Image 1 (cartoon, one colour):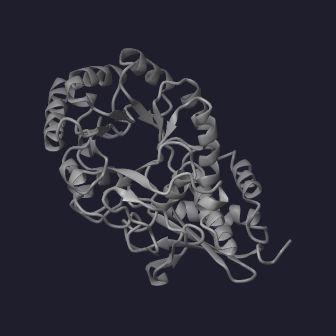
Image 2: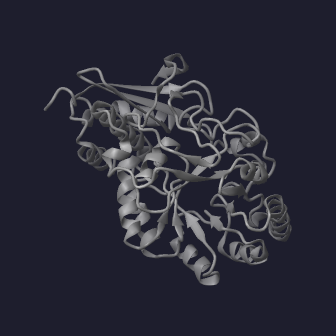
Length: 392
């Protein structure tokens, strides 16, 4: 084994400030905290209906992992899962990492996954695996002085187009993004009044951007099938480009019912699904028009590539959820449409800022809704200041 590729040390950190790093949804203020009405998985409980932060979506926080070789090259990645995920990496997964050849990414991934089967398969353990996987790809790229997209097949696209998820579709259009995605205010728990208010809200958003601009709706796993069918019908005149995450990804039969009711509409899901096993039925049922795995949640770039290969055999579009440069390198290397999501993390949702906040130097940013991926080694990012981190 070449010492150039041998992992000699691993360091795991927690990020001190919210909204920085992999948990980029945990912003300190602005539209992330003051959105008075947003349909969400907890909408059935009035005391938790209004704000995502009220029910703890931001409690885990970010982690950062550094892998260093015997020759001193460092690969880095951020992820979500905070202290629990960091504990898993340090106390369990480290045995499959330290002393290993960092090029053996598939081996390391498989050992982490199989060893966590008794308590994993979805959620937190897969998030922890994702962070390790992304750090491995970054490390190999930096050793070889190649961008990650060259390690996974090279460039298919020199430029990526973005849609923007945020509270202000008019600003999104003015910033040059090809489309806008807005959150749905009300779920079925708000009854007929909620249905009416949803239509009124989406009508307002449509008027802000005009008739020919792609407008998508994020339902955040908060609806049931009858309400979703009625809502889609009531908004038919608004020409919604797609309806996203209407149901939890586990409800495959529910998505089948939606597609049967409205076969001409686009239905998407997947950001809250984990691993290729979770995506198997979503792909093979053909009830979704777009699947949206998140590189930092689904098992890293390695698992994202496996899911992409499966989806391509069914001609199902894959557009990753968020994840900044981790998604950019994947999209640049794939022969499908070069489309990506940018999440508006600025307080007002009307300006562009790094997805991972101030954590890194070198994070690519879209301009006028487009981006040419950097050719810097790895994912092109290094930690800006270790003082914002604390050892896990």
